Image (cartoon, rainbow, N blue to C red; front, side, top):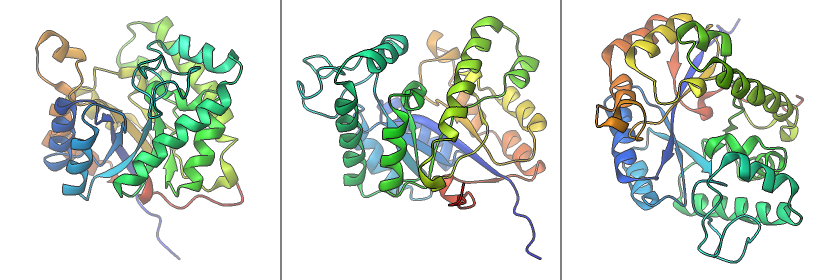
Length: 290
């Protein structure tokens, strides 16, 4: 009888390539701490530096962070007028982008072209494609998901993020902003159910829970240790934004997320729960029949 494998904990930093500060924080969190994966913005202002850093740290699992809002288009200006303005800037508002992509005529073909262009840029890096997800989770939008999932499967991605946090667990730690967080969690849960049922042939790996979505900017050492003590012993992902101007950093304070990721207390807590760490590549292969 083959012994059961320990549950996998995927600790992922998003927005790799967005800035030099974010890149430095991600590399430090990987080199000195427990960060195992990073999601690359191929159109980010520091994307080239991020790719060079990823090549210098081959143990870091790198995936594609598809950007369809709050960033720049990979296509030349004018190629996707339903998505980007004349300077190639994508919509800043998640709500505005969601409505535009769902209702504006001719958007689907331009979304497919933009998504393909971002996958092309990632392929040009030569890095293995560990996973695919989306900036502000817009990859789960009904007009976007099938395009992203099909391209991820075609390009050989190991997995794709189906974003669904645990609201009850999040509120046990902090009940501030209860209504807003509950609405956010409900919307993501509804999208996650739809997306999980529309994976192409079951070839892409996924996890059932992605923690930290409802705790953005507050992923402190204390919270992370508490979370590790309370999550079930199952494969899961924890989402971070080290180096981003959120939380204490916004007021000139320390980068609490990076501090949490390099904390020996956090490393000990992971080991105490029996988790192994890695990326989507380290998950058990998806059942092709599901």
